Length: 123
Image (cartoon, rainbow, N blue to C red; front, side, top):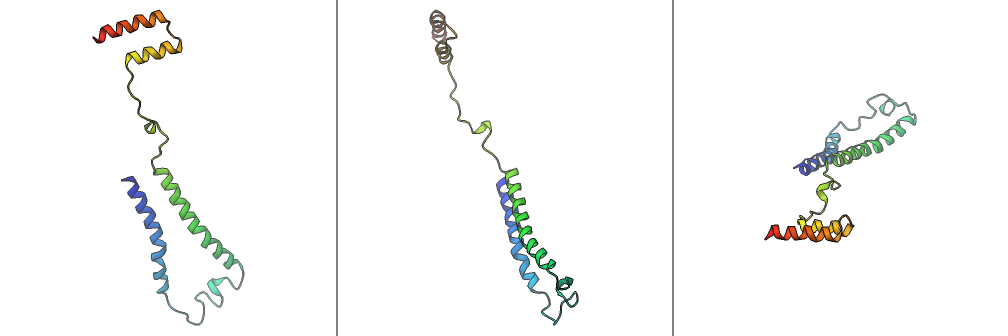
């Protein structure tokens, strides 16, 4: 469910960029002058408008892509938790006793005695 939501948001973001361009194309055609006066967008022939326009054309898509990636990273399930570990096979009491003997926690006499008790309890 979560993956579908993230995919839907990403798809809507990408589609909004492409769906807006035909709407802009429906604007009025060239009327022999700029709507903001004799110079394009009121920049009065300076280079500032061209630099700002170029920066915005680069920055806006980059900001949108970074926002989508951060949202995906935030809501995407990770596999670093304990749930990704291999399931362990339950150990029998005799297995635990053998491990303790192998680690040297108990000596041979105690191991034999406890093993005998476990064998008698199972039968």
